[in-house]
Length: 132
Image (cartoon, rainbow, N blue to C red; front, side, top):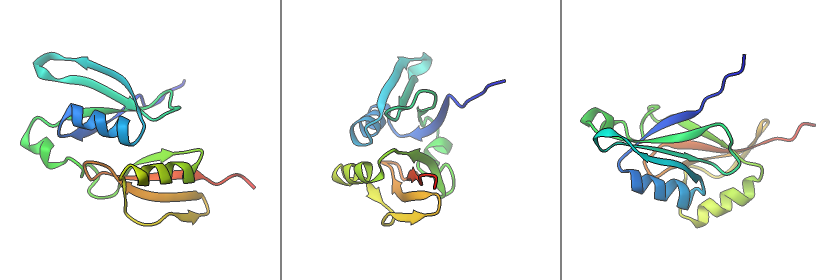
């Protein structure tokens, strides 16, 4: 049996605002933007090189959903973005105005820095250490 996660929902304020941030600032690609019933849209973005998992940008439509924008995990790191070149992506994100919570650090598992997206979600930008 083979399974994989197809998408992870991220609650956002506005579809177009979220698309602009994830594609323009983080460099993700827009995989799909399809109208649904009742003014909803199916908006899927994915990082470059990703072939199986993307982010489903889900517009908050109730006060309860609006209350969790940027806090879906209670302030913990929510998403882990692996890269093949930490320095390239870290510097590109800095130039595009991405806010980092702390300077990069080298851990046994790799080089990592926590960044905060447009909505306050915390992400790890991570380049895994090469096997010895």
